[in-house]
Amino acid sequence: MTASVCLCTYNGGRYLKDLLSSLAAQTFLPTELIVGDDGSSDDTSEILRDFAVGAPFPVEILPSERRLGPAATSNAYL
Image (cartoon, rainbow, N blue to C red; front, side):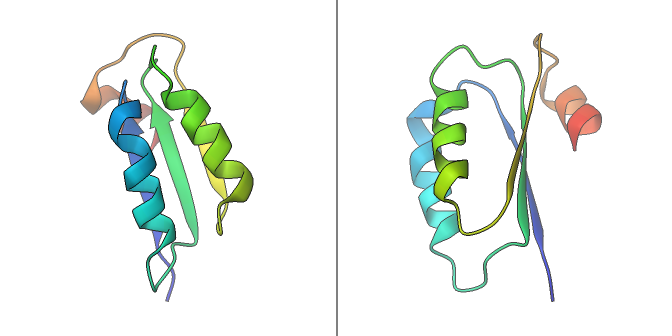
């Protein structure tokens, strides 16, 4: 069985480390993590890049050049 995790982010740096740590600590790891970032202006992108380096599964980060909103980000990137 395989599972992909899709995540949309926007200025979620405050909570992102805990979320990613929890995901990496699961007994059943995802096959991949796909992240659509909606033009974050905080440290979200840096946190995602740092996590991707040592993640126990592939991480694909899809940045947006401009703010799209939650629904459009989900539809455009995921």
